[in-house]
Length: 369
Image 1: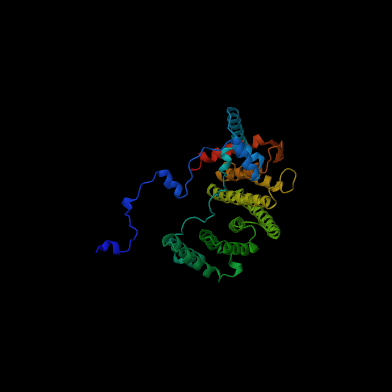
Image 2: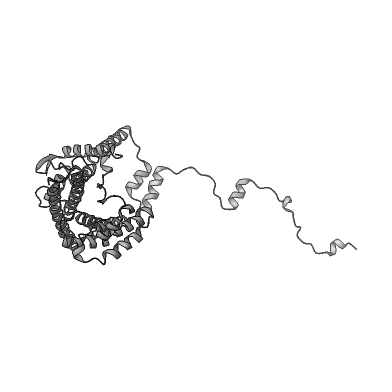
């Protein structure tokens, strides 16, 4: 019997290696790849784009993309040069580095009072001296600013108002320490209380003005009510400083004022006048940095007059404030304006720019002096 004939015939299973190899193009076609074609013509592109509702201008730009010609490049270069020239003319390099007001240094009664000064006789006759020596020892020798302030506050809190003038040096040192500690609100309150009894005291006026100006500088945006309140207070403080400066000038002119005493009084006078000039600038600022015939311009010019006065003309701090004022004027001086009135003199923009540039160069040259 033939067993092969009785078995059912099944389809033979071929190995993959036995499969016939088809051409590459046939394989790609079987899995969905189209044969390579050439790009379509421009006319056909336009027809398709129109059917898809493309904008005619977009079709034109696609077919004929813009190409920069030498003339276009030259025109762009000329416009760039003109723009750079305008920036140089209207925004000079030195205007980007605006000066800031500087200080002549704090008013001070000097260095620490030595403990050798606290003899039994001095302590009995000058009880304030013992407190002052203790404060100075804590601050200058041990570096304990907060503790020194607490000692001063404890001692001054027990002094009757009639004895405030006897303890004035303790008050002066106390204000100096408060200024170093940045406690402007306490400083302003203490100096203001002292001014109620002694309105022409130079130290009280000076530290009150400093505390007030520091508080004003920290305000980002003024409301109309705040502007009005700060303006009134600034005018009051400026008037008080005028009286204090007049008193200092009288003391300086006294026949018994020796050379050293006159030098100390001159230093106090300069510091007070500089703070007064800053107050005038603040009033001008609160009014919006007005120009020409506006009444607020008088405060700006008063500040400039102080900076150019005989006592301050050689001080770099006064020149720095003067440069700040000039910068504010130029910031609001539009290019089409011909002249402006500054300190009752008509000036061209170029003249004021020259003055400011000279000031900035001078300050830069002497910044380390």
